[in-house]
Image (cartoon, rainbow, N blue to C red; front, side, top):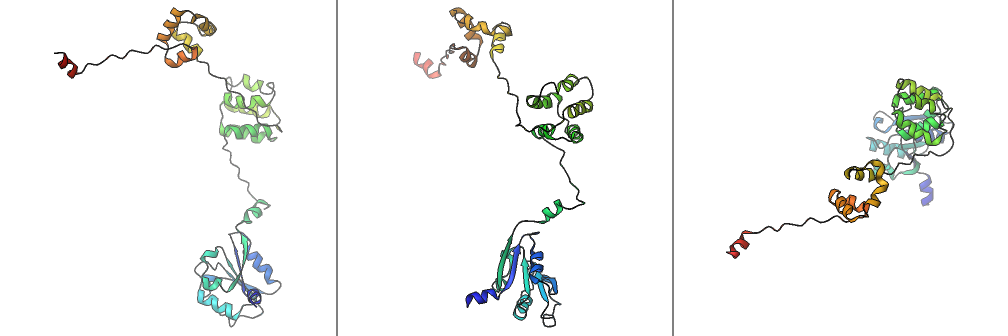
Length: 279
């Protein structure tokens, strides 16, 4: 008996904007005539004069519904009546208890329809970071679009070449590299864009950063040339030179060379109490 009562309840279709609530309701109506009306516009609707064989779809039950009017309609016209709502929580309980719920979910199918529209305007974002710009240069076969992206983002010639170089043969970008300072940037971007066909299918490779060596700076402090960094280890084998180097270099630099930095002796500060005791 409970199942029969549940089946006889009015359908309440719940789903987000663009989820197809109205389309679903129209399909459930079949071939019979129907009318669509909003829940907050029922003040002038007379359910008793409405044809029984006609269907009725009441939209947006969650927005300022005329609750008493909707309950009267449900009593008189339980057949061929469908209600729709965006949010179940906003529907009055007195109405929801009379309905059989049908969830469509939050998916917005309008976006899919717009993607397949014949007269759609595709808006692409031209602003890109260096990684995305490198991917476009490597993969995109439309070189007109690539040079447009390069001119819009205006990357530094050295930076874009350093990102591109590990992924292609250096001969491809040799011309671009040779003119990067001689001609205008727009001409450089055009040579860079049209100098490669695109269609790269591999992974994006990066240049390895060179490790910073503190030895040239240490050599400069000790009065040596930068190229004499290999001689420091031989020089510090002498005790006098090690003492000389430890006095000039700071503790972190001494640690790099493996020598001990002599600690400064703290001068004792005599207090007034000690002076009085001596008296």
